[in-house]
Figure 1: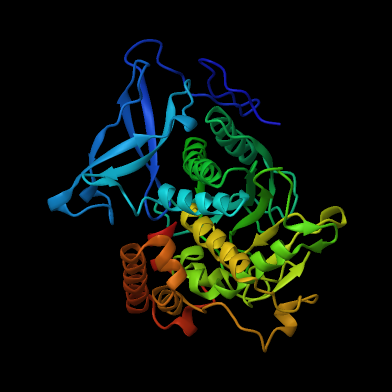
Figure 2: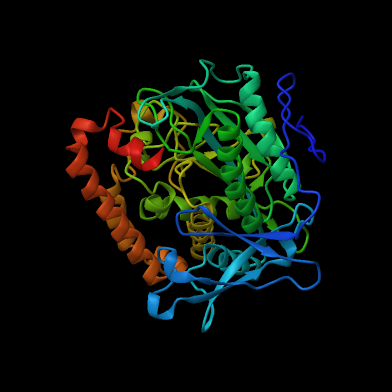
Length: 438
């Protein structure tokens, strides 16, 4: 399905295959990657001639929310399980002078995974990142979709080239891209990487976003994970598929044939119970809430249903069997580590408390969900819900919750000051958003 990268391959306009020429001599550099709190990868290239992995120091005060300037010395601790050499890449956790950095997104998710294992479960995460390929005027203020296709349309060759080049980079990093296809909106695509361990899955999704941007730029396009770059058509989600296996047997425990199991029901109930509180993590920008509107396959009501893409939580029902649940609130701009952490934690809490989910919504909730509880309608309300969430504080930490909520409240005020009232601008994408998010 995907192009294979070969030494010294170059761009060939006849087949759109591409591989940048590698240096044949010189020092060997290890690319050390770690996520910041916005879900973007930070990168440091360190000389490495084999042997023990380096633990380079860095200035934590130069990355928002990492460290104060008076306590700024931090260290990267590579995760040897993620090492791939060649191409010379490893993911790392962060540490401060006193030890592991408690607000490190990889560490936060790792703690929730550990708790699941202590409860006897092996969590599995699958992620479906959507994105747009666009053309612009060179300043990013006027953009248009790179094609006019729709769901499962045959991609233009240049779009396939962008995606397959990024997929090849993911494969070299140890991931397994399993499919890509045109999504519903013009210029919109989805690339899916095989799921598995939650931390490793989020590593690969974060890398995929960066590689997609680089690949698109090299081939004359722009890849954007902005949740809603165009009004009137679907936005880009990052749906998360959550499942649990028995830690001893490896058996799936979320479903029993056509029905949710007691474990699956309680997990789903826990996620719905905390949905409003964690929306600010899943939909972290002003622009996110222009995606969360009725009619564009994005959730609005706190509901669930089998095969129901109008619900917040869909229980996939392929082949008449239940094996996982899909959380549809996260969008393409979110930090996948933090969303996975709070989502898993909410589900595990549901299991601990033996919760029961509400009645299934077997109908189009956009048309019949008027009496249901809704997700927060804008970033300001979502930030307030996050501040009040004891679950979010227990998983993310008091300091990180306060930092996230304060940043989102400031972003909301900046939007209103620049773009105008929310009700008046909800139906359009403003220049302020394009300049900030594109």
